[in-house]
Image 1: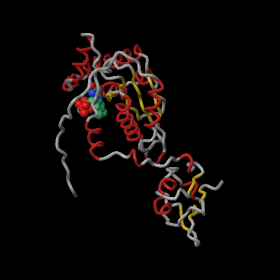
Image 2: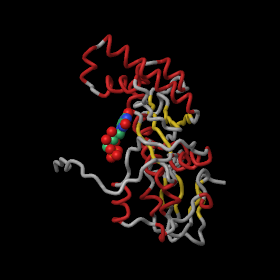
Image 3: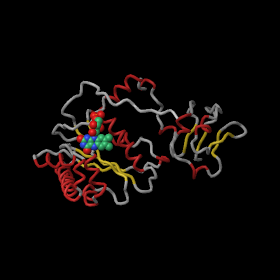
Image 4: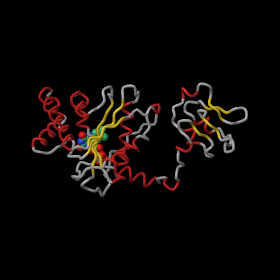
Length: 273
Ligand SMILES: Cc1cc2nc3c(=O)[nH]c(=O)nc-3n(C[C@H](O)[C@H](O)[C@H](O)COP(=O)(O)O)c2cc1C
């Protein structure tokens, strides 16, 4: 099979595949049918746009065949009002039911998160799932130990009130770091991912937005991340792969409460330059 295969019975020679290709490696031949330019294989991003854009289903790609790309179901397209309510109603969940999240459900979330865009379509994001509550508690404890050291050695850290408050809460028996969440998910990317932190963030955003559709809630674990950034031992305890400088953890679980209203946020500051 060639890198791209054209079904000449279906192709209407509209050239959409050629103008859409982000790597500009598809051209139209004299007879109007598309072909890949010589050496195009090495430049292909494997993004599948050429297959996705063809209204006739006439183009198939060696690594992204027509059969592997289901058609978009128009009945499932979100309307603006649905999208606005969905996006505005996503909340950071800090109260979780004492109930594990099934691994199949976590798998479903990650299966969708892998469709988030990545710089150059590199798709290098990897996942760690911690669903052992005692391990989650121990990670929270290591974070608190780090905060205690930080507050002792760099008293200016006191200015960030969340740190001393998290330590005080821990001493009173409450985990303000990981909120007794039953699961923790970490997305990470290796150094060679040239937009690694953005890739990780987008993948987690997809997971974050998908979670409520499965009855789940999430909360970005900024406190743990603060410790992870500087503590190789916490990174090791969590199992972040060596050579993955980009990472972020997110809590996951079944929420204890339901939200009834949409809180307001600051108006956007926009400059049209
Ligand atoms: C990068 C990031 C890190 C965060 N870290 C924490 C955290 O460590 N603990 C926590 O309780 N909430 C954390 N949050 C949640 C924010 O406080 C929350 O997004 C904000 O208050 C707005 O609430 P909402 O997400 O429900 O709209 C984090 C959010 C983001 C985006």
